[in-house]
Length: 240
View 1 (cartoon, helix red, strand yellow):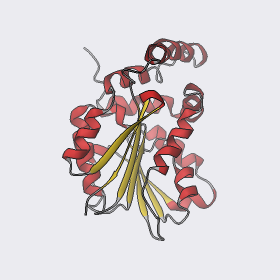
View 2 (cartoon, helix red, strand yellow; view 1 turned 135 degrees about the vertical axis):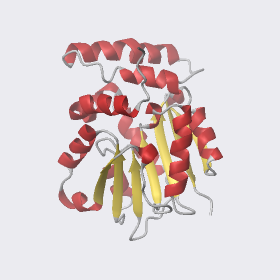
View 3 (cartoon, helix red, strand yellow; view 1 turned 45 degrees about the vertical axis):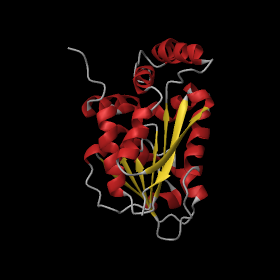
């Protein structure tokens, strides 16, 4: 039977397996670009961050975006981090330290089913979780995002994509589909978790289903490609 790569249990299992090495390996595999992309996501938030601001980090992983958020917006009072993977959740908790710990709360849950209160978030971010949703799930995600945000609240989302039309796409696909899985099998004891990046990005395409879903949910959004379209950034706000 063919596996369903969008089944929440399958996604949680993939990230549980790679959680312990996610931070280092994702940086190496992206040649460091992932850090610049996270900064770009935070920079796209149209937010003055007054005292008392509450944000949500959707599909938060190991919390790599938090330092960028707290550096740009030092007065953020609280970040609610949501992730479906218990392993990623545990890694994120493990790495909390200093003044950051009491400003971040964790919710190990499926974003598509979360019962966070309506209009409770002053902003939302998501970094590299959207590719694990199919088109129908993007619609659910967008409705959840619109429900959670306060009127006028901004959001910024970023995801690795398939840069169709980019002159370097053949090299990009060769790297994701063959080189990266080979490196992972060789140096990470036969692991094949990051090899899923090629599968997910190919299915994700240019992310048009995300753009459509966000607009259909009533959100104001603009999308732009990064590095030839190998990543895509969405930013906007909930009207009101």
